[in-house]
Length: 577
Image (cartoon, rainbow, N blue to C red):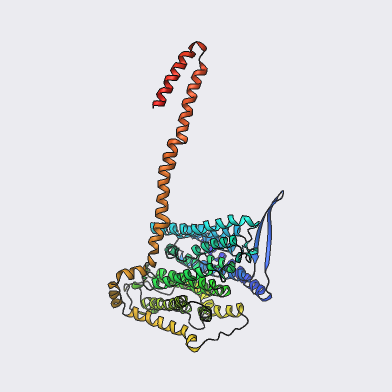
């Protein structure tokens, strides 16, 4: 009863604070207001420790959405985690996670950003290893160590910024374009953002983090951990406008988007398909951001958060009813067993595909039209549109396998739509996944701008979506023949489905070899040579010297010569030894 009351109180508080931040965000947006607050924590002699907070429409809107999704996830967890004895601890971990994200969002200062950044890393590790088994521990270690690379980059950027007299990066953004040292700091920030948002070559931790409970996945993969890198680069957007760094990020994020879309078409784990879909959308946000359209990236960040959290919630309900099976081949025809969950799942999937007038359509369609309007090379153009086709392809494949095809589970099954609390948690996000995109598009882009394109380019987005969906349906419908055919090209299929061998490279490159080098260094240096010629050896030399000195001092002059002779003989023996 106590744990359930924690869930309900947390849900209520977060909803109210979210509403407050949303109204404040609207006000700040309408009057174009930015508030910079300095709070002096400690003043000692001439030294003062000041905490700086930045409130503008971007930070307030993002906080509102994070808190809204968190409230729905906590309400949903009330039933999803009800069998867990430690649900109170789980809710507190989720609240710590949200608090770290809040700190990161409102920080214009690299030091306070690092506090939120490391808070996210630490609490995400605790949540990933929540189900304490070997798989969870391995996934948690991969997540933590991959993110440590970005943490180190951020620490180096903080150290380098000491040359400028302040860690408030917000004052130096214009300088970053021209000054070489500031560009170096910018490069370190981009590296940190790449690790947190799982861009190539740090992509393998994101599907591994699926070992966490599904409510955590809904929160992590929609609006908190993985979006922290994108949000940081939205703040540092000046770095990516017409610079080599921006061109590099465009290539990396385009390849990430393509790789994740390709991998999801070969995957059979329900949660991993949705995780790879998140990775693909992160690539889309990063790529449009690296072209200089930071408002568009932020717009897609918010709309994506709504339908992705809903997708994970529906997936959690399906997995619960499938007796904890996540294999989509074991599902099928769920539309008759769980109609309401299936309807929510389909709506979220269509929003992801960019179905007209759902949340995803407003941001994705605008992004693709801006890409067609921009001066962009043909390779990046191909990556954008092919990846969009792959998104629709794996979405329709998922729909066919889990919701429409033949029922492949046991005839005696507990599947139903009776989980009232979980369904209510989904409903809040469902409404926003339908109306959120149009609402945000009117708020963020109040002045209508016409994008004038030829007819064939205007229809290209719809054509790519329809052809991707058709391909996904056909591949699933003739799945047996298709997979027999794919076995003829086994190596290529394995390469595509294993995220271009990145999990293997990450496990070896980030965990196994560095830890083995550390162990060898410790054994040979710290416990070996440094002991032999360092502290232990010096201790023995001093001890012997002290004993001899004591023996000399304790004797009188008569025995001195005898002592001297004995000391000389001992010295000879020691030197020979």
